[in-house]
Length: 214
Length: 214
Image 1 (cartoon, one colour):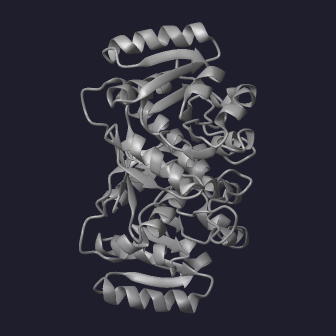
Image 2 (tube, each protein chain N blue to C red; image 1 turned 45 degrees about the horizontal axis):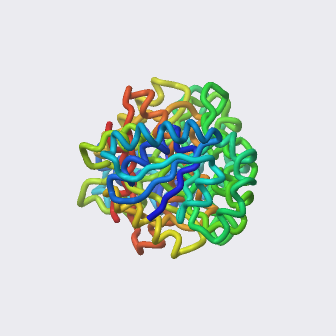
Image 3 (cartoon, helix red, strand yellow; image 1 turned 120 degrees about the vertical axis):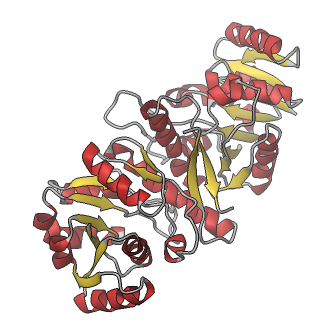
């Protein structure tokens, strides 16, 4: 499957690209700067043994992807997403965005919509949005030697879009759990604030979450 | 240790009472209605084999407890907490409160303070507040036959209060993790919305959460 990763030059996006490329998907890294996207694609191709990874501007990447993954910083959504709105129409779009503010009075700082994912949906109203992959540590994604000890929590309104995302999760060995509608995205994104705090307190890079009893 | 549980006639409070009584603590069930608290105490004493469990009004319970656990509905905080403010001064107070609204447009509905725990702290400004025990399913607490598959996530400003709460968690077999300041309570409480949704979608009563990598 062709997967575009907007903001794919960041750690989380590049980690997802690597894991998916190894699983056999074709990756289009998107960036504001097409040159940076291209350079990152070359770097990841070397790492993932020449599996197809290319780099383009965010707009071109969104047009090329069958699935579009939004791995942008929360602060960049309003500036970047309008230019990919048409390209995302009717497509499965995955928001991995986490609205965290380091060094402020509060770590988890969702926008007025309630969550970054709901802001993405407002900016891409015709996208089939799924919020997912927030908790899979970039550190875990980049090291491909071992299994990732983390569940994939997904929320969104479109059941068939969630099935596509669940399959993308399983392709990197994750168990996917449906955690309801997009109005649950705030709590799902907020878990990342808990994990970031655990990483800091316990001097880790790769804490994750497992739902028990399922 | 004497543990007062305000709202201890509810499922979550009664479950905590049972587990702690079996672990050797003395429990004071608090309720708006002292008669209901007394009746619940008698019921739990039978279940926990005559271990000390008594019932009182919320105000009397708060006065008797060395540790005060707030297991009230989120909607009842503003009405109930002012009457226990003096009794909670300087004490370790545990907020297990989760601001969920079933049947509305959004399941997780924190107050303007950002979390139920921050609202509790505003109403009990001299309490040594720790937000904890939100994720331990009442169903798991009430069945004492097996170990609880869930981590205890704690947040708050007072490290020694967190140590007391960690010990209370260990006394029922839980691993306790420090997840930072009280401004992280919103994300911690929000996890309960995720678990409530998982329970509903997967027809469970006892989903829980484990942090991996620690």
